[in-house]
Image 1 (cartoon, helix red, strand yellow):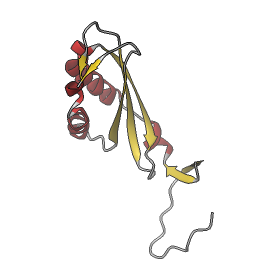
Image 2 (image 1 turned 45 degrees about the horizontal axis):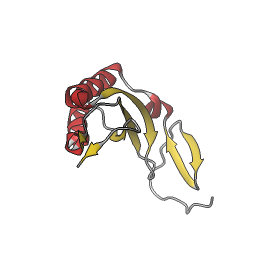
Image 3 (image 1 turned 120 degrees about the vertical axis):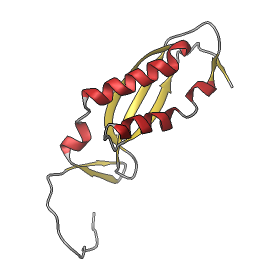
Image 4 (image 1 turned 30 degrees about the vertical axis):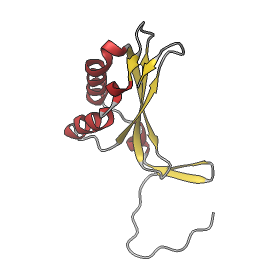
Length: 125
């Protein structure tokens, strides 16, 4: 991949480069993979408090990069089946609430929340 020459100061960092779909993802190993236990506990507690009555079962949290190469936290929220339809409103504002809690801990990565409901679960709008 040919890139135009850069002007200005030059900085040296230890980087990892991966290519996905023609896009280069560049970042430090520590920044990509380190998730503190405090961050994990905060996310888990917030999700449980907010989603427990909607069948919250647990969450997997991992570091990744978005399509522009910026570091993010991917939060895969898992739900068990509940007999009644779950209101989609329980998820409104969740990302903002998570973001505020993470920023209070000094975590700068944006949380990307993905919800995984049971295949049989009914969702009310």
